[in-house]
Length: 360
Image (cartoon, rainbow, N blue to C red; front, side):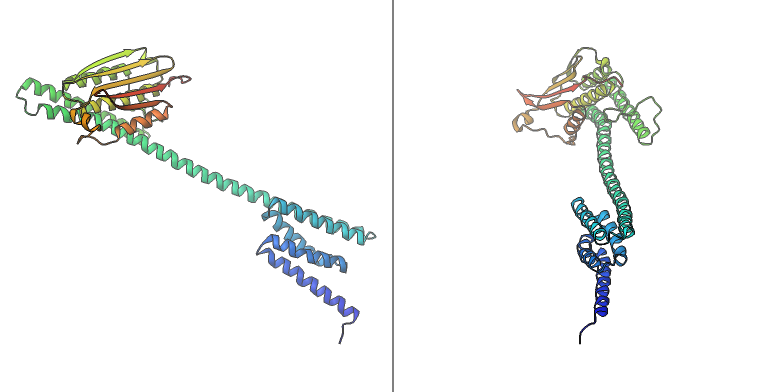
């Protein structure tokens, strides 16, 4: 039993409808496969001369391809669909309305798909920017935590080391006058530590009153004159019966504030290390040299005999954070630092660049 001609045409129309709905269904899976599958619908519509039934598939598939496919596939898709429109016009040149209708359908699909593609790409760019900002924020938070850790170490370590060494060195002394001097030194160190802790708390609470500007490098909190810092550190060493030699060359106060603050913190840590490790009553040397290009620091002190034998520092007062903090501070300003033993001396050399930096 065969199909009559009219029934056969109806079958092909039904097949075309099935293929059209199949292409629409494949859009939910993958737009590229839907585009390839829709080629059979286009070919059959040319054979049957029925373009209205595939218009829905043309619109949906084209929008999906433009919104999700690669640029190369989008170009191939548009070329194939444009050829389909031209073939429809070639087969029905006496019906220009068919041609312009298909052009309008394809053009509207292209515009909607291009808009969706643009907004989708913009959303991805925004999401990437958000991820980049989150990474940057985490790095800034980590840098801030390190800066706070350095400052807290500097605030506490030097003054508490000074207090500890003062009390340990005079705890068996029977000289009342000497004990009074120790108490004065301890009181001054405690007041200084308390003052700097208060400055840090103001910075953490954003209660800066302008007296101590926020230092984004964590260089210092309450650093004033660098020369005064050097002389105060030397006085602390003398109080502990060391013999410091101080050499200052150049105009220290002409240096940028950040450089001066970093240098003060480095010198403070270096003197703390002298107090911790150097033999009692030993001679030590502090050199500070400033010129128009850089600020250089050199601190040298004798190593204890145990360290000369082992080549490493060891002390119950050591936290292991001092030299690491110095290296981080110097790195933030683009300088360089070296430390190590040489000829029975522990030597710290630091150079901080000042070229192109304006005083803050």
